[in-house]
Length: 225
Image (cartoon, rainbow, N blue to C red):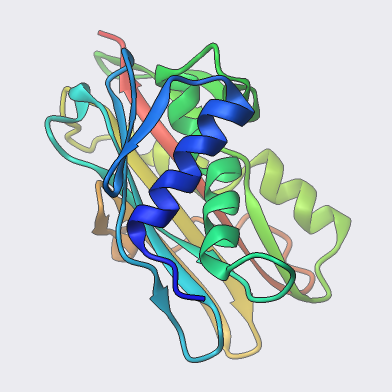
């Protein structure tokens, strides 16, 4: 069954309204959460050769200056639902909590994020961290997962940003994907929708990596003066 961006937006609006009590409504491929400034855009699902589906999802807020914070959620085939719906569900429970904690604090999804104050030089901010999403490709241990949850690579990047980088006076969003594969390590950093991995090549070195797997996590840095 084919499923398009507008179908996914309608599904998301119903999920937010009926499942989480938010005043959400879809207009085409964009979901508006009335009275909050939060808008969520869905782009066309992108089928992959292996049956997976990539689903681009972006979140916007007036404080973002007209930009959307984009992610490529991944859906897995199998079961009774379309892989794009699977991708949306994973995104809603690992990425959306970051933005809910900042802009929709009464939503139950906000409880899945962690807020932490951060200061560096004359800058202060509140950082919202989402739950780490891990995949086991063979041999990951409880110690691996605990280390990923306690100090995900995204947290390392945020702390480094406060040690000399010039940050804008508006929210900064980022996510990292780090993996250890049989072919070697993978480190990807996406900062304000741009690739920044070359500057943060060692952000996952503190993890024990007793097996092969990956960890992905999100953060939103909101200036507080």
